[in-house]
Length: 336
Image (cartoon, rainbow, N blue to C red):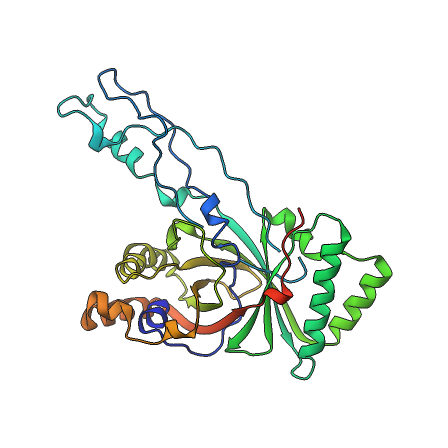
């Protein structure tokens, strides 16, 4: 369960997907504010909006093979209505109290969904160097092609199922899945490259996940690319998905915020993995962040932290954890 892994900072072995979250965690989510409700006409005796005043926006998500992440444009921001706390005492129009509360906190569930395509590649143990050389060839071809390419970010598994790589691309829609197979080389050269890299691979899985910003902890400003990424994969018990979502939203995320966990990116896997699978990505700046006491125990106390873990474990069939390292030498920025 995610609480157990983050809360006690334990690193267990092996999961294989999920990176559906991080590569653009510091950029994309910052550009994805939750939609605001339609403006309501203010009563004549209410104070007017202060020019430029806006509500705080949610923060920011990850990587892929062959091609990398395209950033969605920031939607237009509707004007914010005066908050309920700013009403003059006794001057709220009848029936307006609930409207003011709704305007003050727009439902996080309305946040725009984000899709990520992930290629999880298991490389033959004696062909790792050749595989990485071919990925660098692909990166160079994308950079030199002059074509519009989505790019990709590469991560290698450090603890868990080693010799495994996650190549991650952000998707605007399911229609953009075709971008994952764009050829940045001439047809004959591309066919030759595919044959050569195929000889280095044991298995290749394509996964699509949907980012859930309303169930995440997203920094309010752009963050540096993390050196490491802790991936925690939960498989939820049949019939418990709604209860699990409620637990994440109402108990886990508030507890992690209280424990000063800086970022957790939550992705619900949709295709290419077992059903009811969720992945949590926790960016780390180095191995030293795994040392020290549990932040959850420090924040909640031993007894409350253990009770929280048990409530989460009761909703999960299985949970796996792995550590990934960002591979800038194998990644390429989009050329869109």
